[in-house]
Length: 589
Image 1 (cartoon, rainbow, N blue to C red):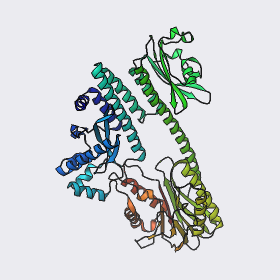
Image 2 (cartoon, one colour):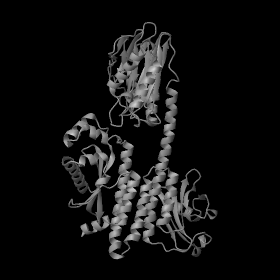
Image 3 (cartoon, rainbow, N blue to C red):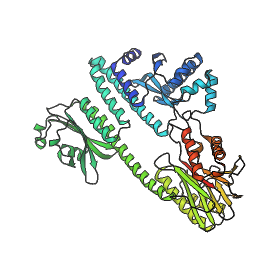
Image 4 (cartoon, one colour):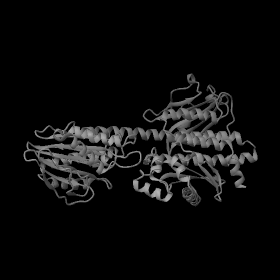
């Protein structure tokens, strides 16, 4: 019986339209559907990503793909929920339960065209050996496939959860109504509209556009003349009209006091109100609309607004109307909360960005016989990287580069603390390792667990050229000597800062001579990736530096070399956003 219904459901217009919605939002179609016995009922070969098509074109690859599908089906059946896992080729695969009367009668699945982590050369070799497809063909098939971010993965899972719930709702209503009322098409379209609202709530539209679109969809779904969405202004204890569709605005207030009018009463009582005919209600006889259904928008126990739908003629509201508007209200409340969170994050990033701008030197110091240049490029609004120069005295300059864990206001405050500690101890301690030691203990005392800082701090004697440094878990700076193509790596020091009290740090003194180059950099340089997931790497960095040195010989300039490296990284990773902040400090003697 369930198999017969599933086949009917997969042939319905409702299923086709809801699939189209998912494809429109995620650019990811449903590729296959199986029943509870594993029998394949739908398989859209032509819609698979290019990499999948290539692998599935040979028997071995097709078998691997089928096993991957089977594993996901079993996991869905076992856990009774949607799953997102890795395919053997490294792409993101997903599977969703098709539930009828609390029983899984089938599983639908697909493939999101992204890697969890960038595909490496080793992974490409392994895939080539398993599938017996040449690496060249595999490499060509993944050219436009990047790695999925944590945020994007969470968004994918959220939208799939909404989609799965919408499909379940559609299936169950279609089943009941098809059997008892013969109204499958009418209600399928209603549920479709409800599903679309869920998809809109998970989309990337700005919140004003989302609310406007949802107000329009709600009006269509409930077959009413108008819809309004009011949001609570907590400062003035008023409800502010934030979105509407079809509303006769001349008769509606932009701002409503709590307790006034139908909308204000809903907010005050935090209960839904359904009025069949306002002309029969003494309190609302002058209301523009006859039929009114209004309910509060809640976030946990907090009132955040009110949604209402209206008809010009009297209307008897039934349980289906109330259920539909309740579901819409949940989506609207989620959108409002998400927008508030984004505003808070935006303010946080603004504060963090301001802190960062104040901490990074406006320009490198000008010193006789030395040429210094520096750059930091955040991969987001706020960087976790930091560099600094400290004028210790007339003869000594402190140079530091650091990477603070985390992002946002927390990382910026940690950066600010590190900046203050560095300046304080650089002026009170004579040795680089003592400065690092003092900073480590201070950070350990008041930094929350899981936070840390990597840093290289060095002291340059301007007169002698002696550079004394200590490296606390940071990328090793490189020293290039005149007429020597092999760089020295500045590795001496100890562990990262802030994770162990009284950690021991050593230091090393090196002599810098005229024509020597010291390059400090963060992992954003070497870990920059291209479209194939390959990293820029230390070897490519070394070759880039040598290329510049060989081309310029005695005309080496710090800024020119910095630009050369930066341009090489950008050319290499063309079309792929930075994975991390990119920072460099270059010292030429």
